Image (cartoon, rainbow, N blue to C red; front, side, top):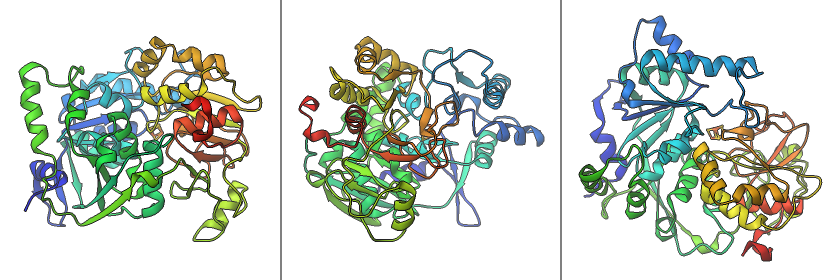
Length: 462
Ligand code: SF4
């Protein structure tokens, strides 16, 4: 009987079984940022411990970084303190930090892959929920809390419950105007926001295999929104091509050795799964959330539901009425950014929609590249000019309005068409602000129209 990638990687990294049934798992790569580390380092210091494997730890700054004005010290004292603490902690522990002057700073889940730090078969941890993104490479990647960050800093290990594996096969071909974001929103809508609790999601099938690494990252990024602890795609030629030549990927002969190993850790054809789900990719349409969790979504040509658990509360908060079309919902802000959808290919797709058109007069639209690397690459292609000429703001790299731990925030009851991953109440900085999650192309189309539209109906979306 064959094994899944999860089981192979898990077994290879198992230090020991703990008496409580958990596994002590060795973590190959620990990614850190400014928000979840100051306390963890303080706890370490209080116990007189040091960082066990500084060379397996890499830091960057993302959540609290202003995207308009980077002059230090930041006017937000708390933000300045957090960054200064990370800088100090990394310096003292000998940890590599990609800071604002590095030229490669960005959202931790964007720069890990971009730099080739994220590789197949690794175990990865980061004090951020969306660490599942790295699973796109066939890594087993966990989002962890502050006390677990302390544990990994001190021991390079985590105590974890074993996981079941659900294979989600997406068959067929995606239609024009349908993107990875629509696929993952559709999966979460079908299986529910708690459907993946206790599971790792293995994404497979022809529609997934045809996806670029950027698209696979979008899918894996939102695994956590479906309740799954991790999400992954088996490594293949697409993965190998992406990694070749990246700064921290193995080079020359070592790359060929690594490549053979990466192939060996993919799930075996006869692997047995705890659960299997099959979805016809051709049936997926551009999808938009109408509620207050990522599972509350509809296809853009469907009406908002009027019944079901939690619907009344969500409709009231969103100011929507059951049965009304989601299409035509007026927006105030368009946010193109986040670790879900702010990679170069996302910006290209959005720019394709935007080129030669104007943002609606009542809409504030911003593009926030996921990293300084993405920003530079986009500028080399002239994408910044496309967005600026259309009336978008072109910002520096960071988390920005995904979480609004920085100056980028919704005001009052504004509605935001957003390429991010969470539409929880207050997520974008205003307790009454409202979020509609959708693909970058749909965000771009909504910015131009000033309301939710179907990107498939735009001639210039071709
Ligand atoms: S972009 Fe959003 S989800 Fe991603 S790491 Fe930043 S705050 Fe978290």
